[in-house]
Length: 227
Image 1 (tube, rainbow, N blue to C red):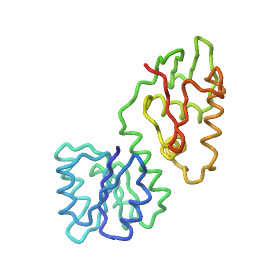
Image 2 (image 1 turned 90 degrees about the horizontal axis):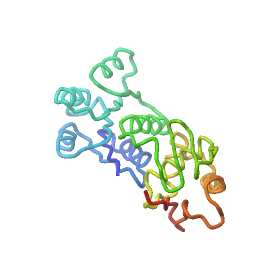
Image 3 (image 1 turned 90 degrees about the vertical axis):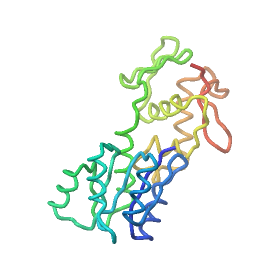
């Protein structure tokens, strides 16, 4: 479960950001003051920090400087109403990984958050041998029992999420977010089902009776191959 920390003193904006970013695999912890933020970042580990700069009791920029001075390398996105180039340079030089000026689109924020989480995520093995399958995601080469399989970019993304979570059911909402990370809300409702059907046609001996890419009805899909 990914945990994001949000420091934002505007209650309505904070709620809106949290609702936009939370998913079945991601939680957002909120604070509205610098004092509360310091307590949270000292006692919990977060995958990403989103810090407002202008606060009633101080500045998120000051918190960022303290974290970097202490060796904390957690990715940080700064939020601010200051749109001067100097302010952005100051934030980035202080150790911010990204800088977003208000007002901003929640869709843009989601995309920026997804980009930071991808960069900081532990790298999974790019090449796997699972049952009859040889899967090389970096080389984009896929084989079953030695026979080459051609997969589209979308099919590759879906397959990678499933095999990296093999043995676990991945909800449809999570798969949609992972396969189309920067536009999941605009994806057609049946796009995931269509991609699963195409992937099964290429991987399964009998797509109507799948051995590997199985449906968990009412929830999502799972990859059933044992390592």
